[in-house]
Amino acid sequence: MEISVVIPTYNGAQRVPAVLDRLRSQITPTPLLWEVIVVDNNSHDDTAAVVRHYQATWRDDVPLRYVFEPRQGLAYARQCGVDQAQGALVGFLDDDNWPQPDWVAEAVAFAHNAPTVGAYGGKTQAAFDDEPEIPIQAIAKFLALQDYGPKPYRFQPERQILPAGAGLVVRREAWLACIPRQLVRISQGGDDYELSLRLAKHGWEIYYNPKMVIQHHIPKARLERDYLVKLTHGYGLCTCDLMMIDVPLWQQPGLLTKFFLGTLKRLVQHQIKFRRHPADLAAQCYLSFHLGNLKSPFRYVMRSLSSQFDALRKTTAP
View (cartoon, rainbow, N blue to C red):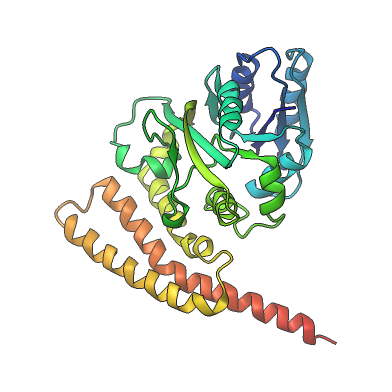
């Protein structure tokens, strides 16, 4: 089997059908063997019944499987999907990602021509219920929208320029060799980047494949100012968790200090640049992101000290 398409979902009974409809309509070369796995991440709605309905009318040449993952968290759901996958590649689609008809074929073709690439994402376009009343281009990356042009592009993990998890394809052999069963980030916010960072640290290349195109459904509620400010702040908070992965303890104080000072500088520059337009949505989102970054080193240190204290307490307990 060449690729397993994994769809993690939580209470996705209303969203999963749109993804499955598009996967059922995929156009693939005849020899290509692939499967679809819906990972129900502890849903309390009719997700299971919806998948059973699709299984009854599904295409004969592609298995559609359902598995249940009781541990809450996107990272757990993805790991469950990898455990169940039979394909050499694992492609992740969120339950609000709508792949183009050739998405599966293009995902497999790219892997055949790039054996040193461990993970790759594609072009992600926005699908709005209604045309947004606000400009979103400046904050597109926070909404998992990406377009790096018409040519393949090698991401830069050292600068944390990485693909979103929406539409990410990973070589299963690379995942099994590099990804621990317990990630640092186990829920939304940084877990996507952690996967690519860990693969890159083990020598795998991370790429952008422009021929893999999905649409990311973005309802109106996700364009509200409060939601976006909270979202961007969360991304900022997790930065040091990602930056410190596999970094020796003796190097961490210097890196954290350098990061904090650099963030402080960017925050001052941001305030100067947007002092006349404080209500600008993009400016507020980036301000929230920078403030999250500013807190990130302290949050990382406190979590590290707490973990060390818990470990020490367990070793000294009678």
